[in-house]
Length: 156
Image 1 (cartoon, rainbow, N blue to C red):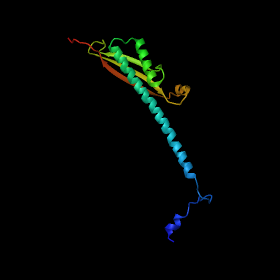
Image 2: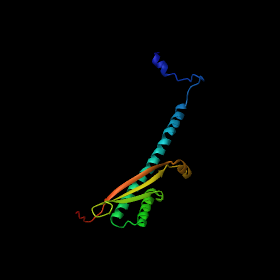
Image 3: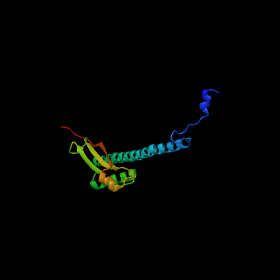
Image 4: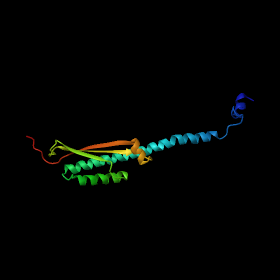
């Protein structure tokens, strides 16, 4: 019988205990899969929360700029719109969102632009609020949008 066939029929023996290894690969595979898949799942959950916040900030900035350019941008209406957008996208209110708007040129005349910026912080998922507040475990998200002011402008 050749050496190859002799080795094929033997199985590995654990050198320390002298007994055959059996079933340890399955346990190692399950442990390794859990060690890789749990952090990967948390990363996917975190990135989906950040992406939803980016969408909400961008939509809120766009809506704020449009309302301001049409002359309907009083603070109450803008805050209601921003809160509604955040509720639609994130399922939570826009209490932590900060909204800024300004005109370029500063007179908000026809032919200029209204700029709106919305800034919020996304708390890391699955962490209690006290830990998020204490450690600052949040990701800042900001969106800016410029919308033209319609109408005719006369340049001297």
